[in-house]
Image (cartoon, rainbow over all chains, first blue to last red; front, side, top):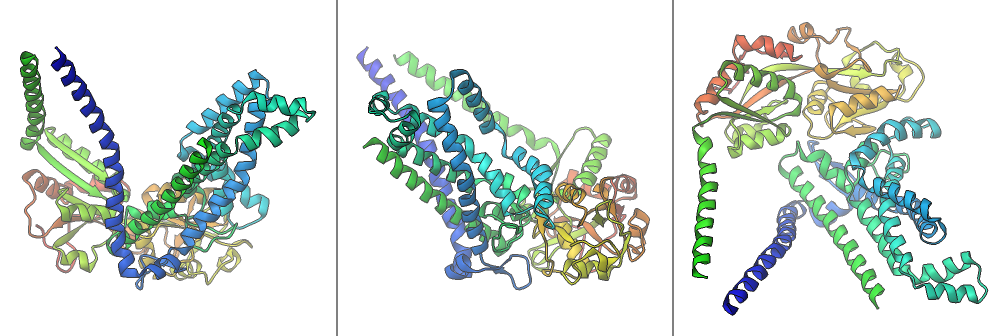
Length: 288
Length: 282
């Protein structure tokens, strides 16, 4: 009888272990595959010309593979989205967590969840049909497909992750802190910004990092609004991100061009790893 | 307890057998698989349908991946016939591939309907796309900066357009979009935009201009007077026999019977003629 129990314990244990290993295996497989297929092009092109070259002409007769425009565009685009998205998301979450009436909070939270569920291609489509012509008319430029359009779309897309995580962090601030501050004569607003927000800062930082992760990895929506030309970034320039560089050329690519696209994916992967490391760091700070 | 183990073992054996049986089936089926150019979707879809009507036991598959991927799929033996909307490159032919032109596709130069420009010479189009002419008033239109819309590097349409207008690698695109639909939508939304797209997919919300005074149509593409056109190519391995069904399909779509279907799909059939040079049927 005991034997039987033991056997099933072990069986279940090993099933769980195998399932766990599947996930780890997937990550390992992708990592190894990316490294193996990303290294040859970098070797052929050279690390410095690849990372810091300013021209990308993958199908030209004398092809050049410099991805600096993509790297800078990804960084600028993400930074821009953070600059616009974080204040909105942060203040929304303070409002929702601290001052909003229950019913309004319920409605807004439902709307934010809905926003999180909208597929990125829909963001892209609306951006393409509304935002891009809008930018052309408002700023009197020849064409609205630009870094600015991508930044606006990304800023909206990262709002849900910023709001949700920040609200959770702010909700978790012990009520005693706030009560103590209020008892000492601070106004509610002073209390929220001087006591609650600092107490929740690691959670808010996590929210921002998650937003960065979402923004830098987004491909579909930005591909439809950014114009996709390998220019050095400028606010009204047509630009190409790291993600869109891979996505837009992959289907027709061949030879060194294809290998270089894998190398771009590898660079993007390193960026994401960096962001994940940052996330780990903030989460660790939260526990202490 | 022992009983349970035995039952377990038996269950596993039965399940495995079931999976194996599933794998074994398909082999006797009549199958044709094609893979490649998204531009050829309409024409190859129509041909596949017609072929299935003749023989309903045939399974026809088309994988819309892009010319480059389609050619690679033939090399890897992952499909019977590869579809490419550009001629094969020299290095691809050296790898043992051969091409057969199925049809010719005209590439329309499209502008916004608000744009008064009706006619552009091939030379002007080249100048516009290389950035020599940047304002519509220098090309017979209103005052306004020309916005160049193109396709991504490697696209068959872009390759076709650039090789015909001799602007390879020189185009100063404002936008590089990844599908014909995106190009049409963008041109329809910007009065100063110009783009190019497969003639078959041009819709009413954009205007196709005349090139050298020739209207883009099936007749002008066929007689060669409309110059912006490209081939739709069937790619096969030179030294490998096609399967019987694939062979039948290949012969059918390059026969006169299929010409009308190809024609209806908006491109001009080549009547299965072989291209000049080393194209030999496998």
